[in-house]
Length: 361
Ligand code: PHE
Image 1 (cartoon, rainbow, N blue to C red):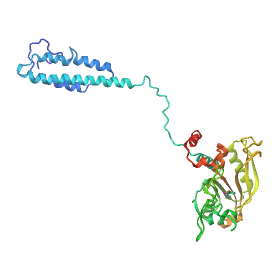
Image 2 (cartoon, protein in one colour; image 1 turned 120 degrees about the vertical axis):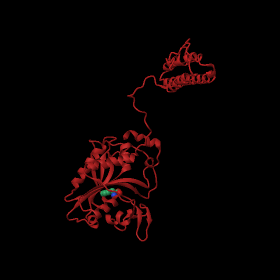
Image 3 (cartoon, rainbow, N blue to C red; image 1 turned 180 degrees about the vertical axis):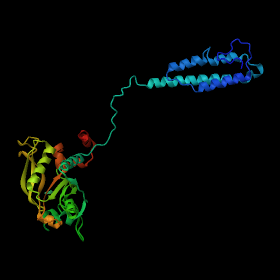
Image 4 (cartoon, rainbow, N blue to C red; image 1 turned 90 degrees about the horizontal axis):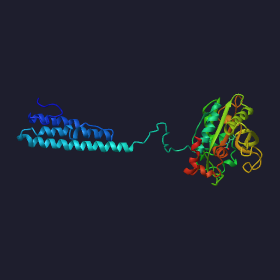
């Protein structure tokens, strides 16, 4: 093939045939279409290589002079197209390389922490509830749950409430229907304990977290619903000393190793003896302050030995087994931990309040 070197035949007398030129044009076209440049400098090098006076496209124009006259028109058109295409392509490469160069950060710090995505936060009551469950979990307690809509038997009768006990009063309980049996919103999660005792023989060691309802006017200090974690342990030879030990462990895990507890005699229909437990006020260290009303102690839960009547009504032999039970309000514990002044904050979903607990995760 005549004159097939890339430098062309400047000043050559060998005439370039139609086919020679067409092949050359197509080959260059394919080559230029596939060009890439990652920097503007590289694009400039390509411009010099193809389009400068001595670039391969320009040299083809020299060859063009020797194309026979009758083919000049067609070859000339193709050659012009090639030149235009090459100019556009290389300009585009230059632009693209320049814009990526602009966008590239001066120096990329690969060790920088990622931008934080705004995630939701756990509700403070969930945080506290989970902590309570964890602490009792370490003592072997498992979780039991039950329905919020209950019947009289599971909330009251099985738990040794006399028929005329004030807690059954309309004042405290939301009734859903009273005919043929009382259906109501549970006032405590002791109903779950009844359900477990009815279906399981000891040893039983459970905590019952959940929402409970009481018919009270809503204020900063009371709400018509709140949350509880109640606990139940039944086995042979379970004693009051076991109860005290478990609650002391709980108080110290929850409020710190210096925490003291004190048990005061109390009354619940389902426990005998019954007690209320106070912890030393961690705000004043027990000296007495406004928070503990000068006493140095704050009440946190109710507890006692399960009344034998309760065991019997749930099908557990009270001569063989004894047990203890306790129950606490999650809001109360959360208040002691986080000093939330108004109980209503827990159910109003104010994001400014909820985000304060982000760090507690
Ligand atoms: N059920 C009681 C309440 O709701 C708490 C409690 C549970 C007290 C178990 C003693 C034993 O107030």
